[in-house]
Amino acid sequence: MHKGIIFDMDGVLVDTEGYYTRRRDEYLRLMGYQRQEDTDFTGSNEKALWETMVPHDPELRQELLMGYRAYRKLHPIPFQELLDPQVLPLFRMLKERGLKIGIASSSDPKAIAALIQAAGAEELVDSQISGEQCRAHKPDPEIYLRSLDALGLTVSEALAVEDSPTGILSAKRAGLTVLALRPRHGELMDQSAASGVIDQLNDILSFL
Image: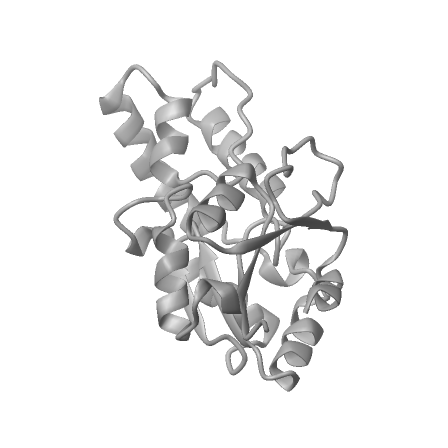
């Protein structure tokens, strides 16, 4: 019997991946830096992302990263605009059924907190873990193992909801059953390792 659900954030609860790409690309254009490859960073973390974008010059990479962090503060994520409208009603239904709710995201803690606030779900989320609070990033299972511990659940008592192959692998390595949310905009993404694929968040209810 399921007693809790652990959600990834970006691409699952909020449609941010495209926004992240546009914001990074605009910043790099302003800095006069041209990326060599058009890489899909869905499910990635900051360190891996910047090592890929600026692979051969650690000094320039650090300089661009520091500048981007400042740029990012001036261009915050419009969570109200990008939030999946099913999030709050779904969370309420899950709590009515007695389930615990966790968020396990590679995003920084402030972004996770901002998403929860934008959703009006402060009283509904039982645990929020950022990859920045972990020793290892997804696909390492640490973030899911920590989420399970925070929720007081075993692997057999929880579901994970992810979208990226990296996130799916992280949850599976923790021993969780994983549902993959199909990409909203038809992006090609290998979700074959998931136990099931859902078209919208409310489809989770049929697996409980």
